[in-house]
Length: 143
Image (cartoon, rainbow, N blue to C red):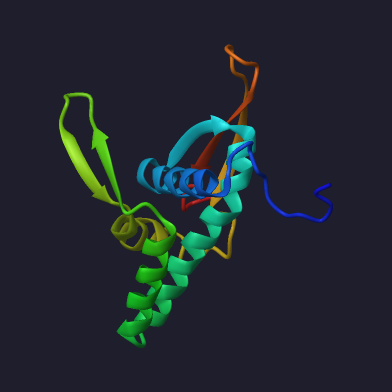
């Protein structure tokens, strides 16, 4: 029995689950929205918010002492997949540094927001296996 056990196992072993979490959070930061199953979205949402908060606090403390920002960047790099390869419509391949995008673009966007950086929108059922699908996206700064 799994009484009082936190987290979802998703039918995977520990290593597979950690890799899935790292990759989904990196995709969320890179693309700013992802389509996945509702269970996976519910699993990664709190951890993605914690990563963004880590970056926010690292930037704020880095203004006083730059070593604090370096420390926050290293913690974020340990918890994320570092690089993502993106291909646009014309076929150009671009490599994105996820940690750099987190600290340079995403965390400053939410500097005045106390939390709630993501939104979970339920889409419906997937046609193949009838799984509940959801879209996890980063909210806009003006909301």
